[in-house]
Each structure stands twice: as C-alpha cells, then as structure tokens.
Length: 220
Image 1 (cartoon, rainbow, N blue to C red):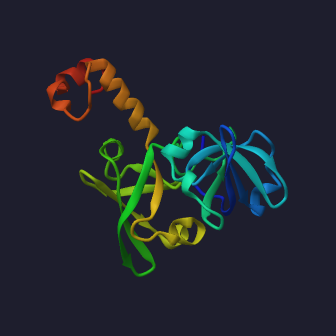
Image 2: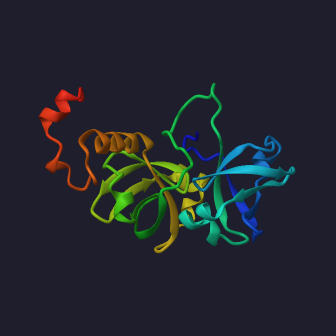
C-alpha cells in the first residue's frame, strides 16, 4: 500500500523487453541504498517489485498487463518518474490509500496557470471518470491529489508549488499521458452496490437503488 506522497523523482535509464517481461532500470540514488530485492515501489503510480539494485538505482520487472494498462511501456531513457516505497505498518499515514494498481491512462486536456499554482484538466475514459468524485481523492502518476471538479469526460485538480517542485507533474503539457488510480474505497462501495442490488452497471443507479433500499441495507 502507498500514500501518494512522492519520496523522490527518478529517471528512466532503459526499458527493455525480454521473452515474457519488460525490464525497467531507474536511476534513484536518494532511495536506492535503502532498497532490497522484493521491495514494492510505486513508479509513477504503478506498483513494481525490485529485482536488483545498487547505490545509484534499481531494476524492476513488469508484465504485459502493466505495459498495456499504464504508460510505463512508452517510457524512454531520460523520462522522469515519481517514486514512493511501500508504506510500513508503523508509518504515519498521510495522502490517501493508494494500491499502486493503475486503472488506466488519462491525458492532459488543459492547463490553467494562476501565479505559482496550476489547475490541470485530465481527459479519461468513462469507466475511470465514473470512479471520481468532486473533492474526492485521485492518484495521478502516483501523486495523491484532491479533485476540484468532474464532468462526463474529464476532471480537474490543483497543483500547489510544493507538488510542482517535488514531483514530475511540473513537466506536464497538453497531451501528456498520466497513470490514473481512483479511490479504492469507492471501488469497494461500487462493487457492493452492484452485488447487493443486482445491477449490471452503476451508470443507471436510479433504476435499482432507492433511499428505502439504502436504509434497509443499513447505509442510512
């Protein structure tokens, strides 16, 4: 589990295909000395397992599913990635619960600059947008952010100077691809409602969910 609070920004050294996996070498001297084989690291929001390391960085493997669902397969040498090691049981919890299981890729639709801050609009598929709520949490390239607003095909977040200074989000331009993970608590609630009320989709909740049904189920 992760929190969405980036520890450091790493740099891609190489992305190589093997027979059945992809190998990613990342320069990350700030955290490399504290890693060990088998550690989980969030790489721009995608949970990867450390397979090798030295004092300058580490190597991780990803399967075809990760390549297809995230933007990691399109990374090249020199690209920046947000890095966060998995949260330990005794750690102080900030940010929000981030699993490192990316839902899909979105793209920057528009950026509004306001002094030292930015408001960024991201376009995404409907199945991702359906899991995002205004003032809720979303992980963008592994960064925990609060949603400002959401419409049928996009959502917006605000980037403060600290976020811009400490993460790779400062490099975003219109059209940039980002890994997106919606709030895991919302996913469980949605799954419960689908099972409880026999819905094929949450796109038409009014057909099956009523205030009375919610009350009878103990939600109210």
